[in-house]
Image (cartoon, rainbow, N blue to C red; front, top):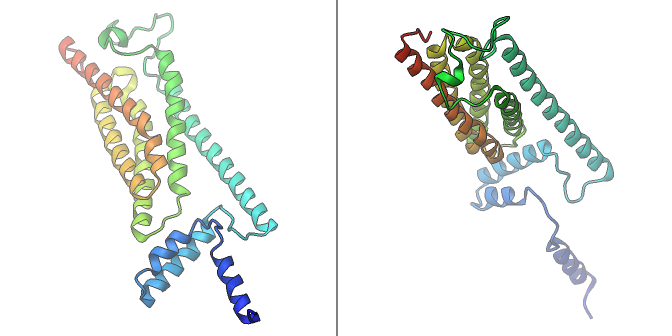
Length: 251
């Protein structure tokens, strides 16, 4: 007959082998695989920090802990919605204050020598396209910022990349907003081109930094925005070239 001690040991072994998912078990395994006390202490520290910041409840979480996790997720979504609305709202207000194609009273939408933007740069889409595209792009910028800000770094390198990505994404948003007053309805096409180049450079490096922090979703969300910036750069450069051919100043 099997002794009580051996039965308890077998039960403990079966429980430890049960397939309960723990989202942090891989981190713990990586940190302790080397076997050194320093590695074990570092892994324990990272594991504790990750568990504290993660919105996911543990495999043996109580009902109260799961309720707290649901509330954190709801608050995070509310924060995302507020961030997106603020970014879209700021861009909309700037667009109203500095319209790309200002229409003087009694005019027909033409400016700067009686030539419309579409006539100077034929590839320019109708104004309604910009009104639809930019809110979507601003929303994607907000999602990218949120994903990076809420990312739980698993190492000091990812933490550094996360901070770098946040700084770069906020900087490119500032230069994005600065493009409209710099463009001045086409009168400042040349300085606006330089602002746009800076915005594109900051956005690309910000996307790489976001990927380096582990927030791959943020980098993917920036894809359409980067593509549109390249298109906008081509339009802005065409505006400068058209002004040079026509002898009009481009800012």
